Image 1 (tube, rainbow over the protein chains, first blue to last red):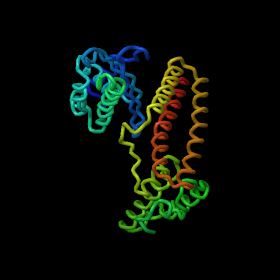
Image 2: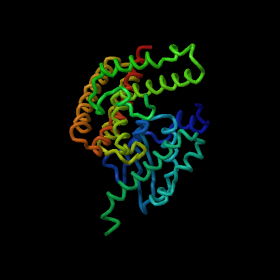
Image 3: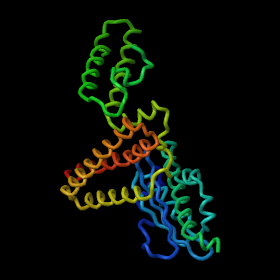
Image 4: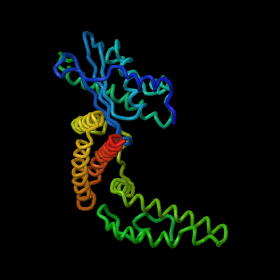
Length: 131
Length: 175
């Protein structure tokens, strides 16, 4: 199977690889894993005032498509509010990267990682939302 | 012989995770010699096709029962219990963190060409895999706890993949 040019670009030059410091303000983490293929994905968002995502980082152990999908979403979530980030759908990721049908699950994993990171953010900031 | 029988009945073995591997091997070889297409080389077209279908069926059943993870998944399939392997949110965060750490350790050892370290990781993981299959045997055969079994199977899907990655890394270091 051959990867699309965009997948190769993200795979060879992944954006925003790494982690934020544990104590950094506004950092939330989404950890997801796909039992079907054994891929593990960590997506971190750094949320500033007004719930806007200022920065994002990822670490993915998996195939090229999984790495490209998570690299792409770190670019896409930046500048969005957490609610807007939840609007990113796996179909958009798959379309942007021209993923073949057998790799659609990689884009689903990336979407689930965003949901998990936002859920973690909301959990950590539940008191602020309520108060 | 009946095409619709389950894999255990096919080899006349009691269904269960604990399995007499030597007996499975023996029954497989017996059946394979009976249905092997070579034996039907001079038979009619229909008979030859049927023997090929049987040989394929016997092979598939053997491969499924022989490998513990495939056997465990098959037992849940027979019990009509979903494993949930398509659910990305099914894994607890601490398990995923641990998996990430293992993969980081493998990646570092591979990058540094530390074959010895990879061997160490391989042995550590194999010990863990053995313990996990022992636990799964109790859950499946003794406690018949399908929910917990599905959870352990999902974990083993990551761990078996990790073992392949360690072995790949060892090969890469040898090259």
